[in-house]
Length: 326
Image (tube, rainbow, N blue to C red; front, side, top):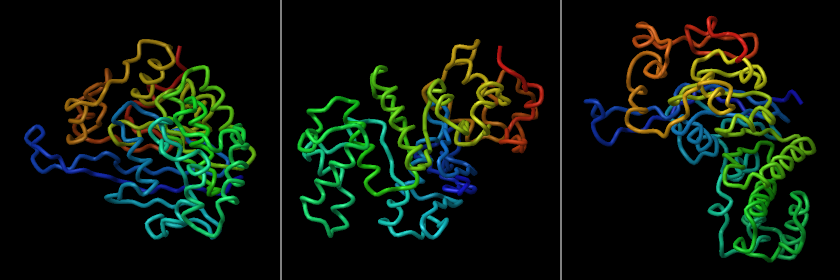
């Protein structure tokens, strides 16, 4: 399964600042800035970072819900990799689908489960309602639901059942790639493991590629093959998940791992505010205002992206930081 499924090259998305920010009227705020990633078939790439890091904007760009300022995204299909900007919408959504974070808000409460699951198929036409219901029943079986749920409305389902319906809907087009945007965060802990096991089983059976967006490193270290860490719109570290989590080289990754996994005095993730957004508009390393080891040159020049044997890091102190966490 070495087929490249997703190639992201130099992706940027900038938004105009609506009011002067630190005297920078008319500035463009980079939500995603020069991000490049690759994902192979049957693999899981986790994109992690605190709120406001740009990971959800990255997902929206991949689904063409936003238009990039620069860069390109290519997704594999029957004819190989193709730029999503050139694909008709129907073809794009045959290649990639999304499972949303909120199983309560992502399903139309006025439609029955079988109608929700077959929305994309019905839009293409060519199938009777009876045939669509049969297809829906088969999809529900794939996600561990029975035919008794076909005619139910979302309000009659539990959170875990709703998320399974969302997964079945995503599978209806037989995509090669699923974007999973915090798919477990709205679920009870007792249900999270069930849904996670389902996703892993589907991946093994169907050869799906997953772009797994999360802030939960405890989950990521169990499911991801590779991990990409984002901070203030940029990639700061990426590589094999086991290596990045066990021995992070970037100070932000290190603090994130320590905070999320309780391995030391890491700084907890904070909600984005003007102070958190300000580094995006300044020269130098964007993490420098929060980095305990920042030096003068860190605030004036952006760190180069340094390639590693497997992955990379954007930090001039990465060699000094190398090593396993206590």
